[in-house]
Image 1 (cartoon, rainbow, N blue to C red):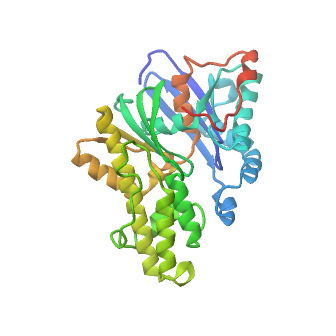
Image 2 (image 1 turned 45 degrees about the horizontal axis):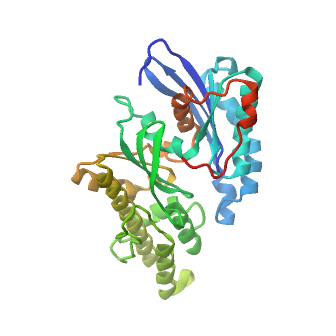
Image 3 (image 1 turned 135 degrees about the vertical axis):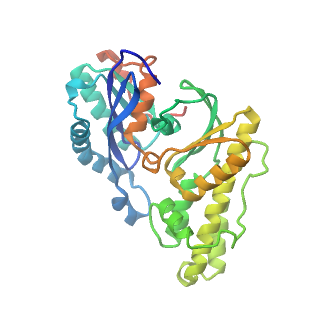
Amino acid sequence: MKDSGIRIINLAFESSCDDFSCAVLLKDENGIKILSNIIYSQDYIHNIYGGVVPELASRNHIKASLPALKIALAEAGVTLKDVNLISATAGPGLVGSLLIGLMEAKTISFALNIPLVKINHIEGHIFSPFLEITETAESFPFVALVISGGHTHIYLVKSHSNINLVGRTRDDACGELFDKVSNYLGFGYPGGKIIDELAEKGNKDAFKFPLPMIHSRNLDMSFSGLKTAVISTVDKLGGPVKIQENIVYDVLASVREAVAKLLYKKTAAACYVYGVKTIVVSGGVSANSRIRSIFNDYGKNNNFKIIFPSVSLSTDNAAMIGYAGFFKFPVDPCANREEFLNINADPSWEL
């Protein structure tokens, strides 16, 4: 993406769940560059509860918000006076968490009269891989798979403003499945990262877990039944306490394999339905090593172009929100004080 004569410093905020992030991005004639991307993780706080506690998340965002801003500006080598644009996540997510980042963004925007754009969290994930692609920006249309602890969605993306939901989970998200299995086996939270590491020690073909809705006549998915099948298998093998360690690794490798294959088959089906040859996979679960290898290997065999963000940009981060903000700014600027009345957190905001 190149625009001669334009230089914009974009200050971005992301606080939709349990990570607070602040980033500074530069857009000039050479494209878009991340100057800083500070992320305060709360994994250690929520680990003992086996999942995110909304009230704790929002309280800790308050503690992280000003330090994150200060460090992001310092690392980028800019001040608030240099900022031309502010981008902030307005939804979906936990309403208490969303409000912290959004209110910080609104305060700075209001005080310094800097244009503000509100960004959908999913929109940020969809375009996150293109932050690191130097040769060309997006090749429209493409099919986007967004996978995380709260989302398993398939989108047909025709442009920055034309994004259509074509498939989704009907119950648990795939990241939620990993969290629940990990907690049941006593490994804690976040389950996706833990399972990915331990699965490397197991045999992925040891158990043939079901692929729910794999033959359905739509692009929707289900992971609740798969979760039940895994727990039932563990119980038959003696339960979380008595099951042998090497068998646990086999279970984890097998469930990871089932999830990866189900995600690929549904995403590939979307490509065939809409005649698309490019797949973008993003969101926290896209860091999973087996999902990456399945998509890359199977995709190559079927002549699909597969695009992932780096692992550091897979999780929730403000850089992806800032990137989306550059494209949203021309159509959705909030630069005057009256418009601020209409900028609110929307925990259920769908694209």
